[in-house]
Image (cartoon, rainbow, N blue to C red; front, side, top):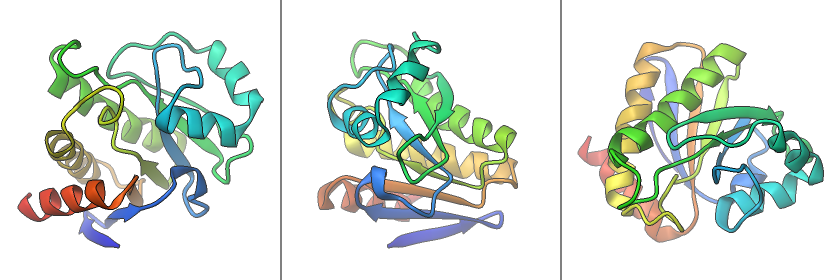
Length: 176
């Protein structure tokens, strides 16, 4: 695990399964606009959380790129799920601002709801095609800025799928 302290909060990078983060209050779903099950992170979260999540999501959809909404965690080990719709690279503009808004809004929701720890995937880097290194720079810089603004969120963990994504995030964190 790689990490950094920011304003009394801890930022961590780990390789793992976002649905198995037992010590985190909220995990972030890299959602689609309709907040429905799909592939990748959204599919894994919906499968692990159970059908009640899909029913709650129907009441909140659709959401726009850069937007974040909160649901219960249901069968996940986490009380909450924050659903963020990242930009589709090359289609949604300005992609960098929309991606930053996902992380910003998720941290703000956590702060508002008293959520002390949050686990993020690499939003938009899968099916939405965002280059991992570029997305990591935006994600890490935005989260670090938000942790400097707020003091309620004590832990932000990036839960990355695969050694390659973890290595890229480590490099970017060292560069910042």
